[in-house]
Amino acid sequence: MFLKRLDTVGFKSFADRVTVDFVPGVTAVVGPNGSGKSNITDAVRWVLGEQSAKSLRGAKMEDIIFAGSDTRNGLNFAEVTLTLDNEDHALPIDYQEVSVTRRVYRSGESEFFINKQTCRLKDIVELFMDSGLGREAFSIISQGKVEEILSSKAEERRSIFEEAAGVLKYKQRKQKAEYK
Ligand code: ATP
Ligand code: MG
Image 1 (cartoon, rainbow, N blue to C red):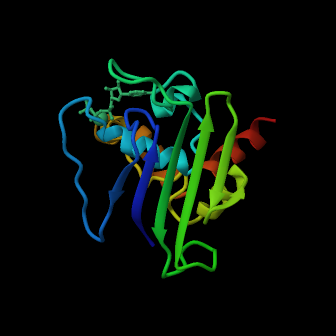
Image 2: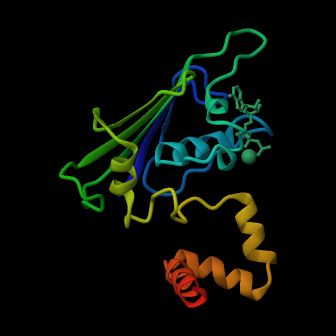
């Protein structure tokens, strides 16, 4: 499984339709400060089901919709589509190529699609569960996380690895059970 393409309209600074094609191997995104590099990873996280505006670096979900600039008005909705190659069937769905789409309107209404078929957010989250890609996975490591890994105390670093290995949730459940 690999990311093939990202299409955005109205997401953060990307007012017009922007398409990023990924090829197998390493893709580097370069550009000046504030040019929208991190907005690309925000778009990926959002379409994979991110529900926290704060982790998308906003105060409320509406903040991800293009707010306008000196020369143009803001938009009424944001839309992101992520297209994945699924030839190895890493995603449990019988398609060689899978696209997931998320759209949000200023009114707060949301729409979700898998291969252009309308679905629920839950379906998208479940599709990526155990694929190593979902919103809780470590497929996206933010700048802050790198610092955490490098500079934290040994115990804190260990809990990051436990989280990545999927152990942390069991540890937390065990602790809860013990303190009851
Ligand atoms: P750096 O190198 O500093 O990390 P970057 O390339 O990662 O920069 P981003 O953080 O991706 O930059 O982009 C920030 C830009 O996105 C800012 O100019 C900000 O005004 C713009 N932006 C964020 N949200 C919106 C929005 N809703 N509407 C319009 N522009 C937005
Ligand atoms: Mg950045």
